[in-house]
Length: 367
Ligand SMILES: O=C(O)/C=C/C(=O)CC(=O)CC(=O)O
Ligand SMILES: [Ca+2]
Ligand SMILES: [Mg+2]
Image (cartoon, rainbow, N blue to C red; front, side):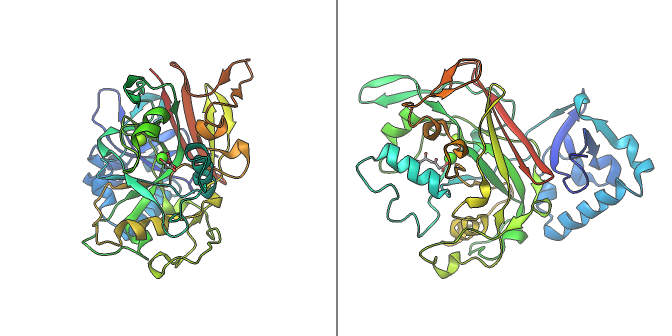
C-alpha cells in the first residue's frame, strides 16, 4: 500500500467543525494522534511542541504508531479518519526561513542566464553553500492561491511580473533548538523532517533588484510547502556527490546525507520535469553546518530549503527560467498550449517520492 508503515508523515488536520490537531497519514486516512496516543502534545494546532521533544521522542513515537497500526489495530481503527473528511493546515509554525542554492546544475544555468558574460559559477560557489534569508511569514500551505506580484521591473518601470516562475525544492524542518554555536555533525539531533517547497519567484523583479544583496521582493511574496512532514527516518540515504575542492573541515561530511528523492513538476496536470535530489552538490548536513558556523542559534520551526533542484538533463530542471531558457525556448504542452512563464489560472504541483515513500505534493494556483 502507498503511504504505508514505512512512510507515516506528520501533519495538522481538522475534521469539519473541529479544532486543528496533529495527525499521521496512513493510506488514505489520517490517524488522530491525540486520541490514539493519549498525549496532549498532539492536541496542539502545530507540530512545533512535538518537534521540540527531540530525536528519541521522534523515534519512539514512530515505533509506537507503527505498533498501534499493526498489533493494536482494532483499538486504533476508530481514530483513523478518511482524508476526504478533513482539512489540512499549515503543519508547523515557521520560525526563520533560509534558502540555499545547492544544485550545481541550477547555479550554472542561472549564472549563464543572468550573467552571460561571466563564468557561470561565482568564485565562492564550490567553497560554501550559498544562501539567503527568506520571509518566514509568507510561507503558506499547499493549496493557498498565489497572487501575481507587482514591483519594479527595471528603471522607472512598475507593474505585474511577466516572469512568474517556480522553484522545486526540498525543505528541512528544525525540531530541536540550539544555543549559540555550531550544529555541525548534529543533523539528526536537530532536524525533524522534510517538506516539499515551491519557492515562487518573479524573475524580472529579481533580476533588477538583486545586486548586490541578493533576492528580496522577487521571492518574498509566497513560498508554498507540502502539508505532510516526512520524518528523516523514512528517507533512504545515499552518499553525497563528490566535491572538488574538498570543503573546509566544518563542512566535512561525517555521514551519508545524500537523499534519494525524485521530484516531479506538473503544470495544469501535465508533468514538465523530474528533478533528481540525489545529485545535489551540497548536502543537508552541510547546509546546517554552514547555517550555524558563525554562532547563529536554531529555533524550533526553522525551515531551510535546498534551493532549486535541477539535474543535468533539460527534463530535470526545477524552474521555468531554466526549462524555457529565460522564455526563449517555450515548453510545449500536449493540448497545444505553450508556456514560458506562468499565466493566471495555472496550477503548479510538485510531488516527490523516495522509492516506496511518498512525500506528497505542494500545489498552488496563480490567482
Ligand atoms: O544566480 C542568481 O542570481 C539567482 C539564483 C536564484 O534565483 C536561485 C535561488 O533563489 C536559490 C535556489 O533556489 O537555488
Ligand atoms: Ca529558491
Ligand atoms: Mg519565496
